[in-house]
Amino acid sequence: MTIDTFYTGTDWQGTSGPIVSRQIPVADLWPVGLASEIGGGNKDVLENGLHPAVAVGPKGNRPANLTGVVMTVQGTLAQVNLADKFVSKQYVANILTYATASPATWKATFAAWDLVYVDDSAGLSAGVTLSLSPLNQAGSANPLFGYIYYCQDQFADSEFGGPNASAGLPVTADNSQLVEELLCIMQVNDFGVAGL
Picture (cartoon, rainbow, N blue to C red):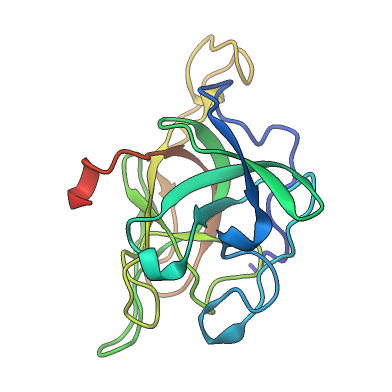
């Protein structure tokens, strides 16, 4: 499936908080907009109502970039939630490794607590900024964004997201090709995690 735009649903939040909102120039966020992928490819152009996962600051800082979720956009400025442990809905690609020196590999399932990275590779659809790969297709380290997490409607009698229960995870993918799935992701901005 080709995903042309960032997720636009009104239920883009997986939790009501925490919120640590900072106003950041759109030019400091990646991969969003024209020529934002490695090799000069285009991601969806950021506008109000879109809530992608992004890395903040120069790509030369990778993999130690802060990460966040875009909350609102006004002109050239975005309000970005940088809060540790915030949960949002994001499209995630199942790619584990790119075909730089050997064949690409993909994961057969998306499971709770799988690590998720901000990925600027051109192989991902225009509306997808996250993958399971710690390296992009050029071999550069991707910033850690967080973990696949349960959506609130996957908890029995949960208030946020509705009073119902669902198995939810893991989600079956295809380990022979790229699959991009809408999942809840818990953001981590703790540089003591995963060796950062």
